[in-house]
Length: 223
Image (tube, rainbow, N blue to C red; front, side, top):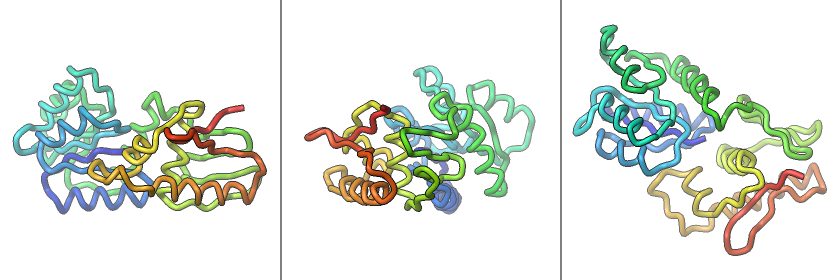
Protein backbone atom coordinates (compact mmCIF):
# COMPACT_ATOMS: atom_id res chain seq x y z
CA UNK A 1 0.00 0.00 0.00
CA UNK A 2 1.13 3.54 -0.75
CA UNK A 3 0.81 6.50 1.59
CA UNK A 4 1.35 10.22 0.97
CA UNK A 5 2.68 12.28 3.89
CA UNK A 6 2.29 16.06 3.56
CA UNK A 7 4.22 17.64 6.42
CA UNK A 8 6.36 20.78 6.37
CA UNK A 9 8.49 19.84 9.39
CA UNK A 10 11.10 17.70 7.66
CA UNK A 11 12.18 15.85 10.81
CA UNK A 12 8.58 14.90 11.55
CA UNK A 13 8.00 13.85 7.94
CA UNK A 14 11.18 11.75 7.98
CA UNK A 15 10.16 10.13 11.27
CA UNK A 16 6.72 9.22 9.92
CA UNK A 17 8.14 7.97 6.61
CA UNK A 18 10.73 5.75 8.28
CA UNK A 19 8.18 4.27 10.68
CA UNK A 20 5.64 3.55 7.94
CA UNK A 21 8.27 1.95 5.71
CA UNK A 22 9.19 -0.35 8.59
CA UNK A 23 5.52 -1.40 8.54
CA UNK A 24 5.87 -2.39 4.85
CA UNK A 25 4.18 0.71 3.40
CA UNK A 26 5.53 2.71 0.46
CA UNK A 27 5.70 6.42 1.33
CA UNK A 28 5.91 9.64 -0.67
CA UNK A 29 6.50 12.93 1.14
CA UNK A 30 5.85 16.59 0.37
CA UNK A 31 6.92 19.54 2.52
CA UNK A 32 4.44 22.19 1.43
CA UNK A 33 0.76 22.30 0.58
CA UNK A 34 1.17 23.10 -3.11
CA UNK A 35 3.44 20.14 -3.89
CA UNK A 36 1.42 17.84 -1.64
CA UNK A 37 -1.84 18.76 -3.32
CA UNK A 38 -0.42 18.12 -6.78
CA UNK A 39 0.90 14.71 -5.71
CA UNK A 40 -2.46 13.81 -4.16
CA UNK A 41 -4.24 14.74 -7.39
CA UNK A 42 -1.85 12.86 -9.68
CA UNK A 43 -0.81 9.86 -7.59
CA UNK A 44 -2.50 6.62 -6.64
CA UNK A 45 -2.50 6.54 -2.84
CA UNK A 46 -4.27 4.39 -0.27
CA UNK A 47 -4.00 7.02 2.47
CA UNK A 48 -3.00 10.67 2.86
CA UNK A 49 -1.48 11.89 6.14
CA UNK A 50 -1.88 15.66 6.06
CA UNK A 51 -0.60 18.39 8.38
CA UNK A 52 -3.12 21.14 9.03
CA UNK A 53 -0.67 24.07 8.96
CA UNK A 54 1.33 24.14 5.72
CA UNK A 55 3.02 26.80 3.55
CA UNK A 56 1.34 27.81 0.28
CA UNK A 57 -1.82 25.74 0.85
CA UNK A 58 -3.20 24.66 4.22
CA UNK A 59 -4.58 21.25 5.11
CA UNK A 60 -8.23 22.33 5.21
CA UNK A 61 -8.00 23.82 1.70
CA UNK A 62 -6.24 20.71 0.40
CA UNK A 63 -8.91 18.47 1.87
CA UNK A 64 -11.78 20.54 0.45
CA UNK A 65 -10.20 20.73 -3.00
CA UNK A 66 -9.41 17.01 -3.12
CA UNK A 67 -12.99 16.13 -2.23
CA UNK A 68 -14.25 18.64 -4.81
CA UNK A 69 -12.12 16.81 -7.39
CA UNK A 70 -13.68 13.44 -6.40
CA UNK A 71 -10.51 12.19 -4.69
CA UNK A 72 -11.92 9.86 -2.03
CA UNK A 73 -8.60 8.65 -0.57
CA UNK A 74 -8.84 8.51 3.25
CA UNK A 75 -7.27 11.55 4.92
CA UNK A 76 -5.72 11.60 8.39
CA UNK A 77 -5.14 15.17 9.59
CA UNK A 78 -2.23 16.05 11.87
CA UNK A 79 -2.78 19.17 13.92
CA UNK A 80 -0.92 21.03 16.65
CA UNK A 81 -4.19 22.75 17.45
CA UNK A 82 -6.28 21.10 20.13
CA UNK A 83 -9.36 23.30 19.83
CA UNK A 84 -12.54 21.37 19.13
CA UNK A 85 -13.55 23.75 16.33
CA UNK A 86 -10.30 23.11 14.44
CA UNK A 87 -10.99 19.37 14.52
CA UNK A 88 -14.62 19.90 13.51
CA UNK A 89 -13.53 22.11 10.59
CA UNK A 90 -11.15 19.40 9.39
CA UNK A 91 -13.74 16.65 9.56
CA UNK A 92 -16.39 18.86 7.93
CA UNK A 93 -13.94 19.60 5.10
CA UNK A 94 -13.83 15.89 4.30
CA UNK A 95 -11.05 14.44 6.46
CA UNK A 96 -11.66 10.98 7.90
CA UNK A 97 -9.76 11.29 11.18
CA UNK A 98 -7.35 13.55 13.04
CA UNK A 99 -4.43 13.21 15.41
CA UNK A 100 -3.14 15.97 17.69
CA UNK A 101 0.61 16.66 17.89
CA UNK A 102 2.66 15.49 19.67
CA UNK A 103 1.55 11.90 19.12
CA UNK A 104 2.87 8.41 19.75
CA UNK A 105 3.77 6.58 16.54
CA UNK A 106 1.82 3.54 17.77
CA UNK A 107 -1.34 5.64 17.71
CA UNK A 108 -0.55 7.02 14.26
CA UNK A 109 -0.07 3.56 12.79
CA UNK A 110 -3.22 2.26 14.52
CA UNK A 111 -5.31 5.09 13.06
CA UNK A 112 -3.71 4.58 9.64
CA UNK A 113 -4.57 0.88 9.71
CA UNK A 114 -8.15 1.64 10.72
CA UNK A 115 -8.57 4.04 7.80
CA UNK A 116 -6.98 1.62 5.36
CA UNK A 117 -9.39 -1.10 6.48
CA UNK A 118 -12.31 1.20 5.71
CA UNK A 119 -11.08 1.78 2.18
CA UNK A 120 -13.14 -0.16 -0.33
CA UNK A 121 -10.01 -1.57 -1.96
CA UNK A 122 -8.62 -2.95 1.29
CA UNK A 123 -11.61 -4.64 2.92
CA UNK A 124 -10.09 -8.06 2.67
CA UNK A 125 -7.29 -8.60 5.19
CA UNK A 126 -6.59 -12.06 3.77
CA UNK A 127 -6.02 -12.45 0.03
CA UNK A 128 -6.06 -15.97 -1.37
CA UNK A 129 -5.17 -17.12 -4.86
CA UNK A 130 -4.59 -20.83 -5.37
CA UNK A 131 -2.20 -22.05 -2.69
CA UNK A 132 -1.13 -18.50 -1.79
CA UNK A 133 -2.54 -16.78 1.27
CA UNK A 134 -1.38 -13.22 2.01
CA UNK A 135 -2.22 -11.72 5.39
CA UNK A 136 -2.17 -7.95 4.84
CA UNK A 137 -2.36 -7.18 8.55
CA UNK A 138 0.57 -9.37 9.58
CA UNK A 139 2.38 -8.80 6.25
CA UNK A 140 2.95 -12.53 5.90
CA UNK A 141 2.72 -15.00 3.03
CA UNK A 142 1.81 -18.65 3.36
CA UNK A 143 1.87 -21.20 0.57
CA UNK A 144 -0.12 -24.14 1.82
CA UNK A 145 1.16 -24.63 5.35
CA UNK A 146 4.58 -23.11 4.65
CA UNK A 147 5.44 -19.55 5.64
CA UNK A 148 7.50 -17.63 3.08
CA UNK A 149 9.73 -14.77 4.21
CA UNK A 150 9.54 -11.67 2.03
CA UNK A 151 11.45 -8.40 2.02
CA UNK A 152 9.31 -5.22 2.25
CA UNK A 153 9.64 -4.53 -1.49
CA UNK A 154 8.82 -8.15 -2.41
CA UNK A 155 5.77 -7.98 -0.17
CA UNK A 156 4.61 -4.67 -1.70
CA UNK A 157 4.90 -6.00 -5.25
CA UNK A 158 3.12 -9.26 -4.45
CA UNK A 159 0.34 -7.52 -2.53
CA UNK A 160 -0.29 -5.08 -5.39
CA UNK A 161 -0.44 -7.88 -7.96
CA UNK A 162 -2.77 -9.93 -5.75
CA UNK A 163 -5.09 -7.00 -5.12
CA UNK A 164 -5.24 -6.50 -8.89
CA UNK A 165 -5.52 -10.18 -9.80
CA UNK A 166 -6.64 -10.88 -13.37
CA UNK A 167 -5.39 -7.42 -14.40
CA UNK A 168 -2.12 -6.91 -16.26
CA UNK A 169 0.00 -4.41 -14.32
CA UNK A 170 2.72 -2.60 -16.24
CA UNK A 171 6.28 -2.42 -14.98
CA UNK A 172 5.95 1.36 -14.76
CA UNK A 173 2.83 1.16 -12.60
CA UNK A 174 4.44 -1.41 -10.33
CA UNK A 175 7.51 0.79 -9.95
CA UNK A 176 5.42 3.85 -9.16
CA UNK A 177 3.46 1.90 -6.57
CA UNK A 178 6.38 0.48 -4.60
CA UNK A 179 8.86 3.36 -4.94
CA UNK A 180 8.80 7.10 -4.40
CA UNK A 181 7.26 9.24 -7.14
CA UNK A 182 10.64 10.50 -8.40
CA UNK A 183 12.20 7.04 -8.74
CA UNK A 184 13.63 6.21 -12.16
CA UNK A 185 11.00 4.00 -13.84
CA UNK A 186 13.40 3.01 -16.63
CA UNK A 187 15.42 0.65 -14.43
CA UNK A 188 14.89 -3.13 -14.40
CA UNK A 189 14.54 -3.30 -10.61
CA UNK A 190 10.97 -4.64 -10.82
CA UNK A 191 12.10 -7.53 -13.01
CA UNK A 192 14.80 -8.36 -10.44
CA UNK A 193 12.26 -8.47 -7.62
CA UNK A 194 9.80 -10.49 -9.69
CA UNK A 195 12.50 -13.09 -10.30
CA UNK A 196 13.26 -13.23 -6.58
CA UNK A 197 9.56 -13.62 -5.78
CA UNK A 198 9.18 -16.40 -8.30
CA UNK A 199 12.17 -18.19 -6.85
CA UNK A 200 10.72 -18.09 -3.33
CA UNK A 201 7.24 -19.12 -4.47
CA UNK A 202 8.52 -21.98 -6.63
CA UNK A 203 10.23 -23.52 -3.61
CA UNK A 204 6.78 -24.33 -2.22
CA UNK A 205 4.51 -24.88 -5.23
CA UNK A 206 4.76 -26.16 -8.80
CA UNK A 207 2.03 -23.82 -10.00
CA UNK A 208 3.07 -20.77 -12.02
CA UNK A 209 1.76 -17.80 -10.06
CA UNK A 210 3.20 -14.62 -11.59
CA UNK A 211 2.77 -14.52 -15.35
CA UNK A 212 4.74 -12.28 -17.69
CA UNK A 213 2.86 -10.41 -20.39
CA UNK A 214 5.61 -9.73 -22.89
CA UNK A 215 6.29 -6.05 -23.49
CA UNK A 216 3.73 -4.93 -20.87
CA UNK A 217 4.16 -6.28 -17.36
CA UNK A 218 2.87 -8.97 -15.02
CA UNK A 219 -0.39 -10.56 -13.90
CA UNK A 220 -1.60 -13.04 -11.30
CA UNK A 221 -4.64 -14.91 -12.56
CA UNK A 222 -7.24 -16.42 -10.28
CA UNK A 223 -8.02 -19.90 -11.52
